[in-house]
Length: 447
Image (cartoon, rainbow, N blue to C red; front, side, top):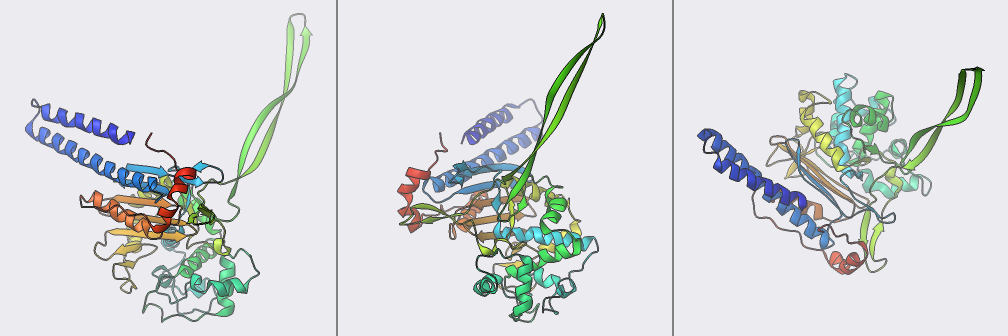
């Protein structure tokens, strides 16, 4: 709120200045007034968005981070609630969230980078890289566009889990082994229909590994995270540890030697100690509301499928996504021509309101808006980019919210478009746990 009031004060001052500039050319006066008015209108929109988000948080309806960017400038950012309730860590804009399916755009970028390097082609059969699979007529392009016909592994999860020892952390190689052993049939002829498939993007991550000779995590770190300075980005696994290195220089002894009547030699000896300490990477934990017992937040932090990468595995912060967004706008990773493939919708789709590109969903009514939702283990995310206006909306939540994130981004979009907006109403569960939330978990962000 302090940021908003400061902005409004500055903008009011600018407007007064613009109106008093009678000595300047008329065109300059008009331009200055127009710019001031635009800034005032933006500040009013930001205040409305902030009011909505604070109301949602205060009513036990939201726990997460929101960020809005216009042409590379962050015009609004807010972190509300808990990152890790057990450790009493609060969220910040630098907290890493498990992106769930928002991860797919990063996997697609890895494939496009390898394509641009001449190491693969979109129309190559996937069996050229993963010969164990029984799908000779499925291409890399089919995987990218969700029209391969390969079943989504979440739909047959019970069968996959039974195929391996109880409690085993299943990874990409295990997934490939299951599809190689069981040979589930295609749902349709590749390219003739569309059906969203997490399996497809897990296989794409494996293709990245086999073509590059590196782990998926290392390829991302070297080619995307580090070049874009995404400091809080990593691929999730159940260990999620990193090694912190510190060095201490210690003086072990000091000898004073008299060389002559008027000369003294001092010899000092030092040693360097190197300390290696493994620490858990800072990140948000996923939660869901529970009632009647235990009241409040219940952690959802482990599943046997957490070892599978490519379709849901990437962790980043809102700050990282802002850097990713800017890197895409500036074509820092691949050429504009290659990147445009990501936003080209395949004619076959299973949805009316949007179609699939490479790792992106594209709105049918406005193909300049590309986006993706993410839903997994308590995380509910939304990432939207307007390629024309360069406006970006980021919503990251680590508390299961049903369809709430969609309702929130609708409200934000309406506010930004100067339309009448609707603040989402509380669910039955949120109302039932409100008093417990207010007593145990509520944080006062207004004072």
